[in-house]
Length: 278
Image: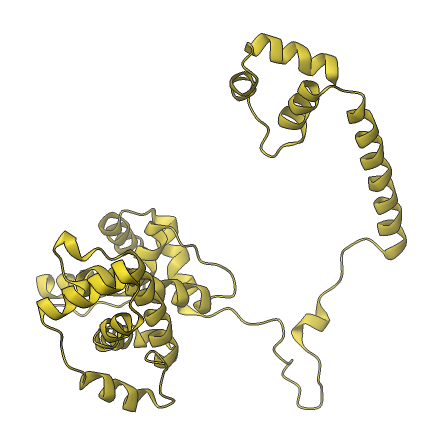
């Protein structure tokens, strides 16, 4: 398989660097054959020619402490996603289009792997995660060049304010992300620091859930209520059932306006039917 990774990423990077670069005409023809005819060989040639791009992007993210081979694998997935959507007739090179998909795939992988607790995948959170260190260095360097003094890389309220303004995020988000980046989360399955013990940190957590007897009683009560609800719903006609489900059971509940539109009746009529059915 053309996208299979070599076990030694150094050898893999050297290998893909030697791959020939496609001319504009060659790339266009391969992309057209793939898009219009689903030509598998054309797809593989187009992908192979851009493996060096994936490797180059992956090396740019090596500072996050993750295996380069994993980043390359994620980048290749992103490249294949780009290939599904690429339209050669729009006039730009595949590498320009694929770059966004490759970076997005690697960044999602880094974000989800970096922390056991999800950091967040909004555009602002991604930008903050991947730009915080660089922005902080740039601001500190600018201050040092201005006053000729050595500045610490520790966050100060003034530095946080400048970073937040530069990246268009709140100051609280800057403080929080700095703390998250400074130290990885620890797994609850890590062993306790005791050479004679096989216990994990998870074993020290107290179970605060209800005991088994209470859980059984609660489950029985829930079953009774569910059966009672089903029996009561059978006494309603189809329109009343739809209103009760939409207004009382759906999450989030539908508005009177939505129900009015769905049933082609007035909002007041929906309200009256809901009260009556309930």
